[in-house]
Length: 395
Image 1: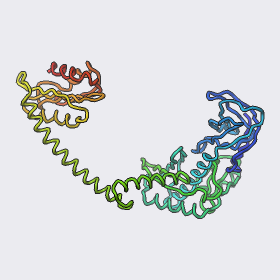
Image 2 (image 1 turned 180 degrees about the horizontal axis):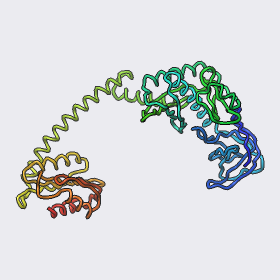
Image 3 (image 1 turned 45 degrees about the horizontal axis):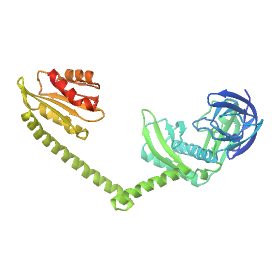
Image 4 (image 1 turned 180 degrees about the vertical axis):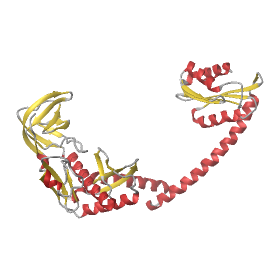
């Protein structure tokens, strides 16, 4: 396997380079092209691979194969020597996110001993997984503040190459088990980490670090963060959202949270009142439907179909009809798919769960329930009336 000199190891800001093609092998997406030297970063260490062109042909992916880098192209470039161009917008974004992750991880460890166990650089957000589930908002804010202080101080970010023995004496944030020459990324007087990724050369180039949110898992915590251009875009989007909310409330930005809380409480109160009214209405409607229903074998069977938007009311109505003496309710709700609610006065002669299962077995859908109440769905709306008539025949 040909060996590739990794130019980004020494110069993360290199955007263009010349190289010689050593080999090209077929692969499902086209070709794996191997060069004697490359500035393209492969997918590795939580950081996605670079994009760009080789000889004018788009690079679809870059794969780390140990000593070699495989550049995935649709076809082979012309000639034995090619010019490579890095997609600088993507590369610099990754440099900001990855350096920001080093700084934020170091800050989290310094303020609370939270150690980073993994890192993922996504296309829109990045995440750090920590070895503890005790992180809270206060600790995250403290780490964010410390991390940004390091960014604002514009500290030097150095790339060092050390032997495994020397690297082991450097107080790395995370010990490495690699042998041979170790690449160390150092944020001056703040963090040292063994890392093969691409990084900015001064902390100020990270721009800003925003620790957006965190999610506790059993034994660990995931922190979502944004740096640099992504942080700027998020801040703009957040401000636009808040401004639109303020416009709709005809209020100042700082008053929006209080107004949302107020309207939320008013909405909850209105929903409670609505629910009470629906229950009362269901009581009256259930009595009317029960009174108007024909009597058969000493009980009254209410069969009715409701609109899709009245599904909650229909379910409640089925229960209320079952509160009447010697009653059975066969309620259908239109929709795609349609829904069924079957109920009877507790202790009635039928098995509503069995009736529903037989109905959906004949007309499609699924569902089940107890002897006195069952529900199902997945029926064709056009067969709803026929399904209810069949269910009534089973009673």
